[in-house]
Length: 155
Image (cartoon, rainbow, N blue to C red; front, top):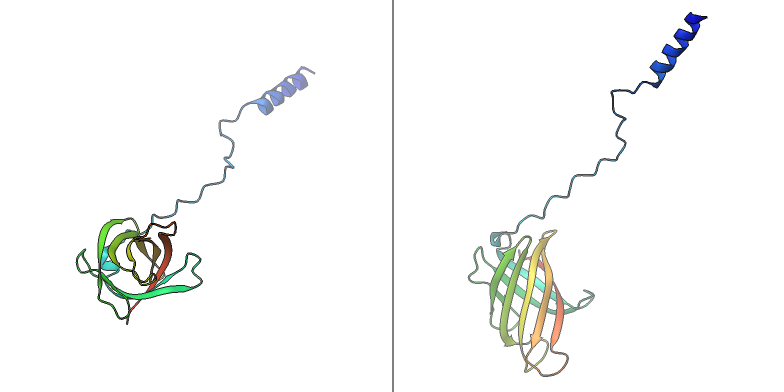
């Protein structure tokens, strides 16, 4: 009887003993973070681009022009049909975007009104895309217009 009691106590002690192995971690592993966007260089967009400026929704074309970009900050222009080239100034490059400004120059959309434009381009699927803000030299409430831009590399 003593033997049975002793074996029973030993079995209970073995069964209740703590395991030295930690419990399995069932926390899901987080996916690795997305790679940062490629930093753009001026040379990435150097060349001639056929650009269309659309309303903010992108469903109607307001203006077209040829955009000329170089591998440095000099010589950038945009040329509207039947007009002289307008100088474009590169004001910064950050991450995947090139910030530009132009003007004042005679507006294509508003006859007799000068306009200044500022915006940013980035490369997306082989196109230059971005938003441009046009500021017209008028005293009315409609002195600012947002234009969605998209350009294809000229052959």
